[in-house]
Amino acid sequence: MADIFKKLDNGKYQYDVDTKNWNPVFRDSALEYLNYLSPIFDKAKQKSEFEFIFTLLQFRGISEPGNVPFDNTVNMYEEVFSIQEKIKDSDKRLNLGFWAYAHWIEASEPYETIGNLLNIINGGRYYRTQFPKKKSGKYLREQYPHEKITKLETLANEVGHIDCLKPIKDIYDRELRNSIFHSDYNIYNQEMRSYKNFSDDETYSIINKTVAYFKVYKFLYETAIQEYEIPKLVAIPSYFNDNKFATTISRKGYGLVGIKDNHSKEDYESGVMPWHIVSLHGYELRMLRNDRTINQFPKDKVKAYNRIAKRTPRFIRKIFRKQIKDYQEKLLKW
Image 1 (cartoon, one colour):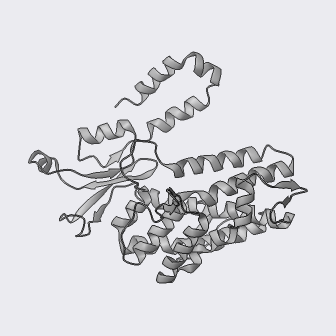
Image 2 (tube, one colour; image 1 turned 30 degrees about the vertical axis):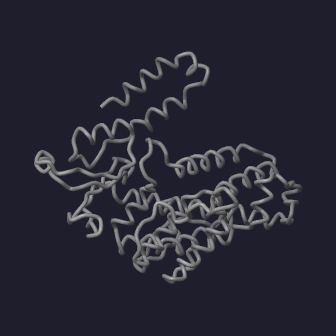
């Protein structure tokens, strides 16, 4: 969406394309949501770029490569949009839209990111989770969307950015959410019949606002990531360690993938302990361990491989599984 919007000198966005043929609910909501959400990205970065980068990295602790749930959400949404275009029956298209709606309002990362941005603006630090599990009887459970929204309202009010929650508050409806997750609804003539009935205008309004929220959030997140495609020195807060600067780690054609110490080869040889917080593929991690000074990786080889694999019919992949695996290992070799 980078070519759709233009950022003005006052920090506000406006459309840079003709939108007269767009759905009016999507068009108006997307621009409104963008101008409500973009300030918290900008202000958090200004307050503490170091903590802002942790937020962009979605750091949740030590894990294997590929453990980024938000990537799955983005991929799922793109696929749903592609499938919807092929479905002629309007009720079936709406059904698919509701499933996507349910996925988006439950997706943890937007809540976590917004919560961390607000906390950073307020002078706080990045937290691995803004919404720890709650005790329910003998067990622990994940927090529900309405509980997360309540906490976000407190954080947003503290820094004067309550409008940043308008996207989620516009689309979240507990009755609608429960109807979808319990498969206890029916769509008839584009109306939803369930615990609470929704007219055809209401259903399409909710779906278009959901898509607008998803598109805007994805645009802001990816734009922030891309701004670090060229490695950059970042000031380290005194509470983290005694060094003055860290360096971002990037991947060509993508952007930010990590942050690390800014020591030289001589520093490492003298026994200085390296550190890094990264989200890398296995072959990239091997490259970093082989050369601790590296801070930019070439274009994504895994993405290139997956693009080839997806175009290969499944029965062929099954027959030539070993050859494809060997090819993958060769492609990922550094």
